[in-house]
Length: 124
Image (cartoon, rainbow, N blue to C red; front, side, top):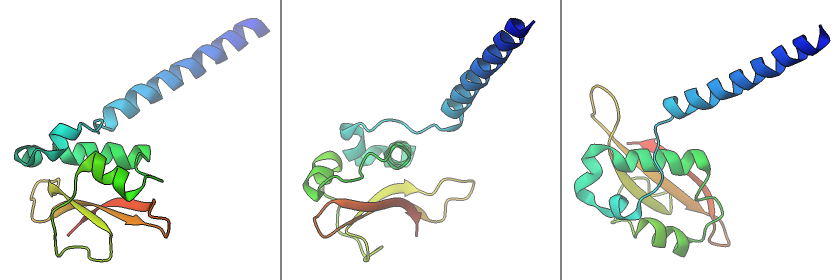
């Protein structure tokens, strides 16, 4: 009897973990960075850069990278007047949602040793 309960509990836990992993993959639709697609400005309107930025932020990919490593990975961002208190600012495209009035941006701040200290996706 105890073995059956233990087997049932292990099976239930395994199913719960499998369901959680499946749902998290379905819920989070970010996609791994493709440097060629990231740098292709004609694809920005498709939302692909937003998806890649989501993936970068959620996975913590940029944390601790040097400025040179970030620029090698994402390219040098064009100058912008937006978010002047951040060190690097990348335009990701029109904001997600039914009515896209604003834009979304990946903003990056470096610490004293020129390593990524903080980054996030913001709207203007």
